[in-house]
Length: 301
Ligand SMILES: Cc1cc2nc3c(=O)[nH]c(=O)nc-3n(C[C@H](O)[C@H](O)[C@H](O)COP(=O)(O)OP(=O)(O)OC[C@H]3O[C@@H](n4cnc5c(N)ncnc54)[C@H](O)[C@@H]3O)c2cc1C
Figure 1 (cartoon, helix red, strand yellow):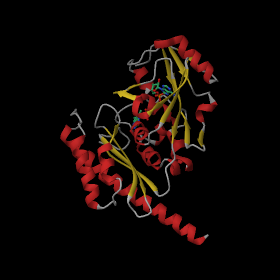
Figure 2: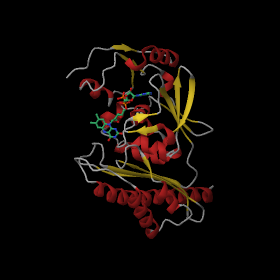
Figure 3: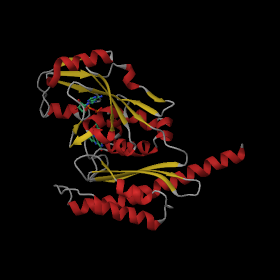
Figure 4: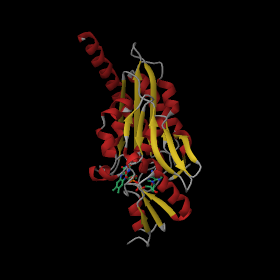
């Protein structure tokens, strides 16, 4: 099928884009990489009269390591963020999750802002944003709003963004030393949205215990899920096999997925625990390797 007729706007500044959104209200829609929106247009599941393409607004493609952390413009593509050394060091969980998003061709067009604004509970980046306590910087006719990821994801594909607002950038506090990230998921085919996914960002203290744990799950709730109960099990303890099994068990007890055509609720619950355990193990191993490397660096200098 083909989309209904629409007018395409290509603003060159943020002010122009915000004015266009304000002018067209519920009949306007932002276009980023188009990897989710264009299929929705073609199936006529979305029928906006005005599309506002953000592709010409240079400031939205900036990815910077600032004094306060990491600032990722909404139009930074998955591929750009996946290649960025700043993302790898400041947000290793995000770097680990990106290769699991769809296929390379989709990651070349799909954007960080588009994924987060689309808010699919099966998608990797919304869950990562929750685990990393990202702040979402939003622009609208009333000016700038900063929305914590915790409050951004309201329901399945629904966010706290108002119809006349756009997501401008994502800000993340940088990971401390001795931090590793890992992601794992299970899907029917590589590149499909996964049935269930789990991500972990683990920071170790000097004595090898877990100083900070940030854990997320996809596909187990109507919004991206942060596994806070499992984080509480891990923090302050050594990442032993028994400790990780306890975190997995708490995860299975606390998630409440629903069944669908693809998997039963019990299957999703069980797999969530297993994937989380694997992701934590890998992230802790990477954190330990990072701290060994920097110790060796300090001794050599
Ligand atoms: C075959 C296939 C497989 C896929 N598999 C995965 C997967 O495994 N994991 C995954 O996460 N994604 C997957 N996707 C989706 C893909 O990652 C999309 O790129 C992403 O969801 C949306 O990003 P986009 O930049 O393409 O946004 P668009 O498609 O342009 O927009 C998506 C929605 O967000 C809104 N929007 C976009 N940017 C902004 C903004 N800055 N401010 C406000 N609203 C905005 C749009 O109005 C629209 O409603 C898949 C897509 C395809 C086609």
